[in-house]
Image 1 (cartoon, helix red, strand yellow):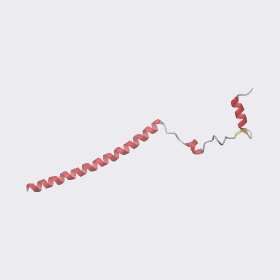
Image 2 (cartoon, one colour):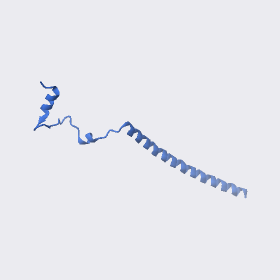
Image 3 (spheres, one colour):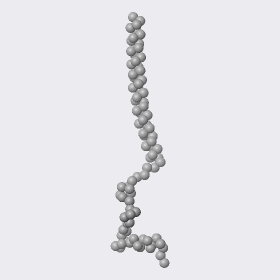
Image 4 (cartoon, helix red, strand yellow):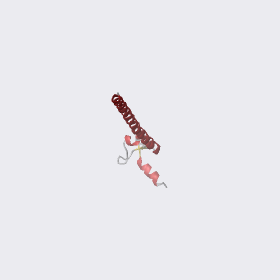
Length: 84
């Protein structure tokens, strides 16, 4: 007496036990090698993206701060000219 699994395996057996895959259910090599990211990896990618966004925002704010500093210097020069 054989189990259904054994009967299935025996039916798939060709040329001394070399398995012949069903072409309808086989996946491509790329699909087999595809890596599914873990939750930790997804969170890491999110934080890296967010970190880049914040880095750009910081750079923008520093440029605005420098521009405002120059504006203050110009205003001080104008005030000194008016006092003279």
